[in-house]
Image 1 (spheres, rainbow, N blue to C red):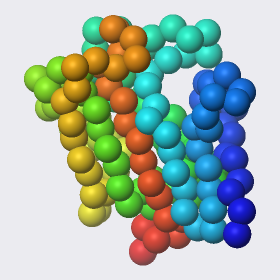
Image 2 (image 1 turned 90 degrees about the vertical axis):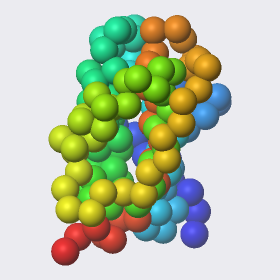
Image 3 (image 1 turned 180 degrees about the horizontal axis):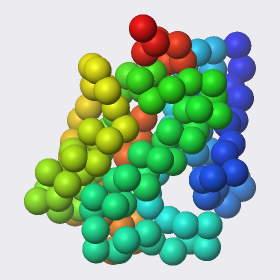
Image 4 (image 1 turned 120 degrees about the horizontal axis):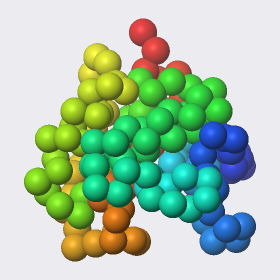
Length: 133
């Protein structure tokens, strides 16, 4: 098996050579920690953790679908918050994207993300076809 880089026209990509946002090997899909930025690199909803989380979950969904799967195929997520008080808003956003048994999850409060107005970063691992009933 070999890694295949997954792209979505709907998700901003990093500068080439720095990292990949999404890779697939076999049925496994790995999504890097994503933040809420638009195609121009501007932070989406700079003071709203709920909107940033929704944006990030949409990006994750685009990658998982581009890899041939669905959000219910996500097995594991790690959510990073720059302010733990944003936890309820981020968990509310998560409920909009998952049904049934939710993914295994870790939520961590950190001192800072890559830019001060970024409040949320989320990474995910999926197994394509595993979430279908």
